[in-house]
Amino acid sequence: MRHRRGLAAALAVVASAVAVGAAQGASASTAGKVTFKASYAGQATVKRTGDAATISASGKGTGVPIGTGTITGVGTGDTSSQPCATWLGTGVLKGTKGTLNFKVLPGGQACGDESGVASIVAKAQALKGTGVLKGAKGTLKVTGVYDDNAGTFSAKFNGTLTTSAATTPKMTTLALAANARNKLAFTKKKLSAPAGKIKLVMKNPSGLRHNIAVRNGISMKSKLIKKGKVVGKGGVSTVVVTLTKGKYRYVCTVPGHEAAGMWGILTVK
Ligand SMILES: [Cu+2]
Figure 1: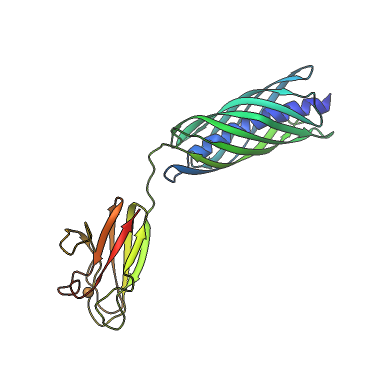
Figure 2: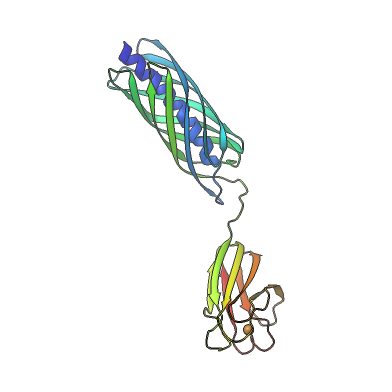
């Protein structure tokens, strides 16, 4: 009996863990895809009737990117197959930055031993997300431990979710330099970066004064979007621009330099 109870409890714990994991995944910060990683702990109760178990669990934890919060879940277990009971359930993960509703997919297991401690393995599917997890889809792997003696559990959630949440674009930094032998050219004729914030950092090892600037197009006549300061030998000229998909010309705006060849093309994908 003890053993079976342990399994049921383990199942409940797993369900809880799954919920937590989903919430964290939602919080991912990369546009579209979110790497979810979270850890939770709490208490689970299991009511048994024959081989059937009714599970309820709740806990606290933290994860990326949803932040600190709670997990709650309910489920049912079947302890007729040993040593691993099977279980199903649904749950909700609430964090400071978002929430995630999930369900435990068929195949979830809780494998116990005579000590009353069971290890849990399951997959949780995202059903609905809010905040940083808005539109969350995908599944998370749940692993954990349930201690039937204490009625406690701990669980970890890992996986990748896709979301429709607006994400903060990461800034891409591109490094280049002015030709060191005073030739009017940059060391790179081509650069590429994903759309979003792009920082161009140009070192100037030459004896001439140079800067880095970006035009809104590939022509020498394209309008300048922004330009960095002109620097002498040993200096660094920097410019930060936010660009959408397309091709742009980066140049040195010191009179005569661009016309002589000090330019390149930045492809934004
Ligand atoms: Cu120049």
